[in-house]
Length: 109
Image: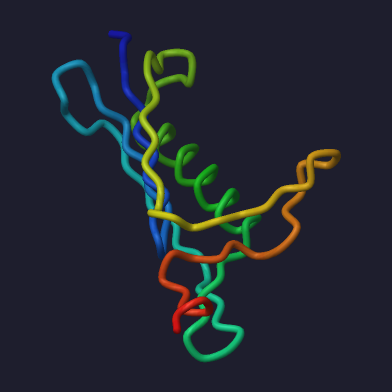
């Protein structure tokens, strides 16, 4: 059977991946946590490389758990964490700084 859906959920404290079949049944699931960085009180950051690594690994683990080949994925759904911001250097594709998480209070009065 083909026509599987890979759902990626990049959340505030972890990355998750689920593989669904055509009937909506979960065929594979994985979750990977990543660090919360608090450079000072009220500030919240994430390492962009850790976000990427955790999401990639969750997707690979969910695919392995499902027992299907990547080529059998017909659609991909992606959700992400609110207004978290990452700046990337255009020339290299590398992050310039840690992600500023939506929970961060550094601009609050």
